Every structure is written in C-alpha cells, then in structure tokens.
Length: 302
Image (tube, rainbow, N blue to C red; front, side, top):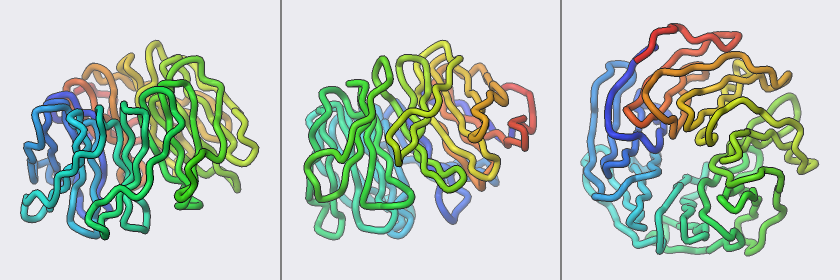
C-alpha cells in the first residue's frame, strides 16, 4: 500500500490530470483534495450538511464541481477556494456528475430518475433533460471514442446509451437481475466494451457494437458498487459492498487477484498513472500500486 487515510465515508474519487491531486467527496458533506506524492491534505471544502456523492475536477477552469443529496450542483475554484455558483439542479439526491471531455458541459444524474446536461459557458443553464429510466440513475459515463454519446446505469436494472441532442436512448442493455450501480467504458483490442456492476452481485462486460453481454464476472458476496479499468495492465477492477476489490484480465476474464483492506464497504475506485489505484471506503481511502499479473506492491492492510 502506498498511502492510506482514515476519514468519513468516501463516496467518490477523482484524479487531477496535471497536479498530483486526488479529490474525494465524503458522506459528511465535505470535499477534500489530497496530494498523493506528499501524502498531505491540500484543500478541504465544507460543501453542505448532506452527503456529497460525486465530485470532479474541471482542470481547464481550476474548478471542482460537486453533486449532493440536497439536489444542488456547486462549483468551487480550487485555487481561491471561492464558490463560483450553486445551482438547484435536481429534486432528489444527485448520484453522479461527469464532465464532458472537450465541451463546456456537465452531465448529472439523480434519484429523480432524470439526467441533465448543463452548459457552464451559458451560465450553467440546463440545456437538455434525458428521461427514460424508471428508478434512480446511479452513474453516467462518456464513450471514449465518441464524446457525443454517453451511457447511464439505473436501479431499474437497465443500462441506456444516449446521444447528446436526442431525447430518447439509442439503445438499452438488459441482463442484470437487479439495479445497476456503476459503468465504465474500456477498449480492448480494436473493440469498445462497457463494464457494469450491479446489486445482483455481478459485473457484466458488454460489446458496444453488438450490444450483447460477452461475459459475466461472478464472485462478489454483495452489491458491486464501483469499477475501474487499467488498460496498460489489461485489468478491470470490480469493487463491492462486501469490502473486496477483484482484479480480472480483460482478455481472458480470469480472476487475477482479490484485495481486502478491512476499511469497510468500497464505494469508489480511481486510477493514477496507469497502475496506481485509489479505493474509497466506509472508513477512508487508500492507494495501491498494481503490478503485472494483478499483484499489489504490498500485501499489508490499512
């Protein structure tokens, strides 16, 4: 283990593209920025009394953006600590905020069953609402090969793929037996896949071209709550409320390793520089270096 920090429950993690910073959002309503090189706390923002389930860097603007259970999106300048704007965005918990890879857009998803597109160059107005899910929308992810396309995961058990500008989904993936909590795209060979994690204790790998499930990853003992891909190592990571993270090979789908750091349920996973992985837990977060073959650099527990 490279670094471990005890804290309130960590609901999301994000990595700055140029600074050695990790952004964590906490169930307590606070957001923190940690320097993973110096292992020091750089910034802390008291956002709200409600859980902040999602926070992201918008590095081009020196901003962080948060989505919380009070339904507000809030934006802060991480250099000055100034609050830029506060938008009453949803009528229920905000589960996820995602920054568009190259346009001034933010996408948010909520327990009000809607997904909203926000344009910060137009004063953070909502320019589109996507409706179609019949339960909480837990996460959204942009297609890495076409940033006009994003996908959403919902507790209604479905995964929907959308085009920005179109009010109805392009297609829907069905196959999980319970709600879907998390999704992530990855490329393997010359194909694009989607990995999904569910309350049915499984993760599924979907071929985006044929819209079919090519593999189900089984073994977790509770809900699959977070996902991550390490393309340089050909590994996908599934993390669960059972407290473990499992590493799988992207070509063979073989289980490479299982980690348990005794920090409670896993809520978030992110990666730094290809082979360092951040896990967010009930009791804090840790950074682990993953070696070829799926071994961690240290077998010690936090």
